[in-house]
Image 1 (tube, rainbow, N blue to C red):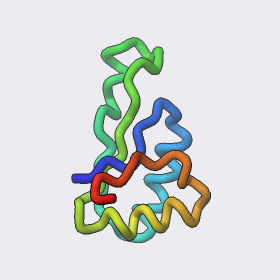
Image 2: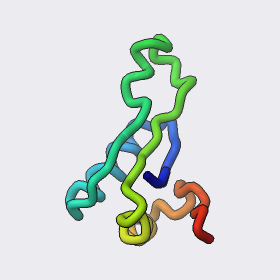
Image 3: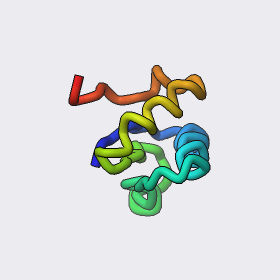
Image 4: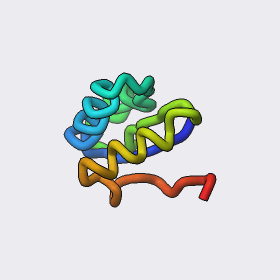
Length: 77
């Protein structure tokens, strides 16, 4: 899995998730339920993950939507 975005901003994660789901890209939002354990203070960022083989397409979609500055560095260069 490739981590594309890590953020405490639930609106950002929701927007990115919607874009990728609309494109039928499988994804996982990790740490989504940590807020219940932390008391909703936003200490733990949610992580948006996609399968490695979908990462390039997902990056293009998110970049085209204006989210390039939110993307984690691509480990493949």
